[in-house]
Length: 140
Image (cartoon, rainbow, N blue to C red; front, side, top):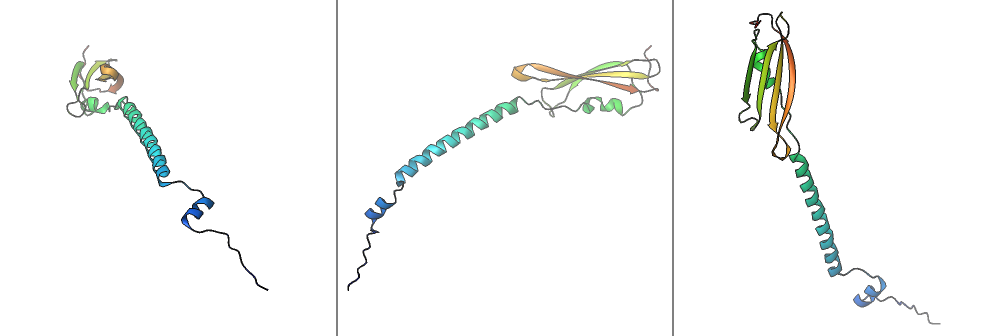
Protein backbone atom coordinates (compact mmCIF):
# COMPACT_ATOMS: atom_id res chain seq x y z
CA UNK A 1 0.00 0.00 0.00
CA UNK A 2 1.36 3.31 -1.06
CA UNK A 3 0.35 6.57 0.73
CA UNK A 4 0.74 9.81 -1.17
CA UNK A 5 0.24 13.29 0.23
CA UNK A 6 -1.10 15.80 -2.21
CA UNK A 7 0.00 19.33 -1.29
CA UNK A 8 -1.95 21.66 -3.58
CA UNK A 9 -0.68 24.91 -2.10
CA UNK A 10 1.54 26.93 -4.39
CA UNK A 11 3.92 29.22 -2.50
CA UNK A 12 5.47 30.81 -5.55
CA UNK A 13 5.07 34.59 -6.04
CA UNK A 14 2.31 34.28 -8.62
CA UNK A 15 0.41 31.68 -6.65
CA UNK A 16 0.66 33.55 -3.33
CA UNK A 17 -0.72 36.75 -4.89
CA UNK A 18 -3.67 34.79 -6.17
CA UNK A 19 -4.41 33.28 -2.75
CA UNK A 20 -4.13 36.53 -0.68
CA UNK A 21 -4.98 39.66 -2.69
CA UNK A 22 -3.27 42.86 -1.47
CA UNK A 23 -2.71 46.46 -2.51
CA UNK A 24 0.14 47.28 -4.82
CA UNK A 25 2.81 49.77 -3.85
CA UNK A 26 1.44 52.27 -6.34
CA UNK A 27 -2.04 52.11 -4.82
CA UNK A 28 -0.64 52.66 -1.33
CA UNK A 29 1.41 55.66 -2.52
CA UNK A 30 -1.67 57.25 -4.15
CA UNK A 31 -3.77 56.67 -1.03
CA UNK A 32 -1.07 58.22 1.20
CA UNK A 33 -0.76 61.23 -1.12
CA UNK A 34 -4.53 61.83 -0.98
CA UNK A 35 -4.55 61.41 2.82
CA UNK A 36 -1.71 63.87 3.42
CA UNK A 37 -3.14 66.44 1.00
CA UNK A 38 -6.42 66.34 2.93
CA UNK A 39 -4.58 66.46 6.28
CA UNK A 40 -2.45 69.49 5.38
CA UNK A 41 -5.45 71.27 3.87
CA UNK A 42 -7.36 70.87 7.13
CA UNK A 43 -4.33 72.02 9.16
CA UNK A 44 -3.95 75.12 6.97
CA UNK A 45 -7.64 75.94 7.41
CA UNK A 46 -7.32 75.54 11.18
CA UNK A 47 -4.23 77.76 11.26
CA UNK A 48 -5.98 80.47 9.24
CA UNK A 49 -9.01 80.42 11.55
CA UNK A 50 -6.86 80.58 14.68
CA UNK A 51 -4.91 83.52 13.28
CA UNK A 52 -8.17 85.34 12.48
CA UNK A 53 -9.56 84.66 15.96
CA UNK A 54 -6.33 85.88 17.56
CA UNK A 55 -6.46 89.15 15.61
CA UNK A 56 -9.88 89.88 17.15
CA UNK A 57 -8.53 89.47 20.67
CA UNK A 58 -8.02 92.79 22.48
CA UNK A 59 -5.33 92.90 25.14
CA UNK A 60 -6.85 93.84 28.49
CA UNK A 61 -5.33 96.92 30.08
CA UNK A 62 -4.44 97.32 33.71
CA UNK A 63 -6.00 100.60 34.89
CA UNK A 64 -3.64 100.84 37.86
CA UNK A 65 -0.92 102.09 35.49
CA UNK A 66 -3.04 105.18 34.87
CA UNK A 67 -4.09 105.90 38.47
CA UNK A 68 -1.03 104.63 40.35
CA UNK A 69 0.36 108.08 41.12
CA UNK A 70 -3.05 109.15 42.44
CA UNK A 71 -3.23 106.11 44.69
CA UNK A 72 0.25 106.70 46.10
CA UNK A 73 -0.44 110.23 47.38
CA UNK A 74 -2.56 111.65 50.17
CA UNK A 75 -3.50 114.78 48.23
CA UNK A 76 -5.60 115.20 45.14
CA UNK A 77 -6.75 118.20 43.17
CA UNK A 78 -9.38 118.68 40.54
CA UNK A 79 -7.56 118.12 37.27
CA UNK A 80 -7.96 116.64 33.77
CA UNK A 81 -4.90 114.82 32.42
CA UNK A 82 -4.11 112.68 29.41
CA UNK A 83 -1.21 110.62 28.09
CA UNK A 84 -0.19 107.41 26.40
CA UNK A 85 1.44 104.14 27.41
CA UNK A 86 4.57 104.55 25.30
CA UNK A 87 6.19 101.41 23.90
CA UNK A 88 4.33 99.13 26.30
CA UNK A 89 1.00 99.56 24.48
CA UNK A 90 1.60 101.37 21.18
CA UNK A 91 -1.46 103.19 19.90
CA UNK A 92 -3.14 103.23 23.31
CA UNK A 93 -3.86 106.48 25.17
CA UNK A 94 -5.71 107.54 28.30
CA UNK A 95 -7.48 110.49 29.93
CA UNK A 96 -8.38 110.90 33.56
CA UNK A 97 -10.46 113.48 35.35
CA UNK A 98 -10.46 113.91 39.11
CA UNK A 99 -13.17 116.01 40.72
CA UNK A 100 -14.52 116.49 44.20
CA UNK A 101 -17.79 114.70 44.89
CA UNK A 102 -18.27 115.87 48.46
CA UNK A 103 -16.84 118.69 50.58
CA UNK A 104 -14.96 116.34 52.93
CA UNK A 105 -12.20 115.22 50.50
CA UNK A 106 -14.16 112.55 48.69
CA UNK A 107 -13.05 112.45 45.03
CA UNK A 108 -14.21 110.60 41.95
CA UNK A 109 -11.61 109.78 39.30
CA UNK A 110 -12.92 108.89 35.83
CA UNK A 111 -10.39 107.06 33.69
CA UNK A 112 -10.92 106.34 30.00
CA UNK A 113 -8.50 104.25 27.95
CA UNK A 114 -8.59 104.49 24.15
CA UNK A 115 -7.28 101.52 22.21
CA UNK A 116 -7.18 100.45 18.58
CA UNK A 117 -10.39 98.63 17.77
CA UNK A 118 -11.37 96.15 15.15
CA UNK A 119 -11.17 97.18 11.49
CA UNK A 120 -9.05 100.27 12.18
CA UNK A 121 -11.45 102.04 14.55
CA UNK A 122 -10.82 103.19 18.11
CA UNK A 123 -12.60 101.78 21.12
CA UNK A 124 -12.59 103.01 24.68
CA UNK A 125 -12.93 101.46 28.10
CA UNK A 126 -14.04 103.57 31.05
CA UNK A 127 -13.65 103.12 34.79
CA UNK A 128 -14.57 105.29 37.78
CA UNK A 129 -12.71 105.24 41.05
CA UNK A 130 -13.64 106.88 44.36
CA UNK A 131 -10.86 108.07 46.61
CA UNK A 132 -11.03 109.62 50.05
CA UNK A 133 -8.20 112.09 50.48
CA UNK A 134 -8.94 114.46 53.40
CA UNK A 135 -5.67 116.39 52.96
CA UNK A 136 -6.50 117.38 49.39
CA UNK A 137 -6.71 120.90 48.03
CA UNK A 138 -10.41 121.57 47.89
CA UNK A 139 -11.67 123.33 44.79
CA UNK A 140 -14.82 124.86 46.25
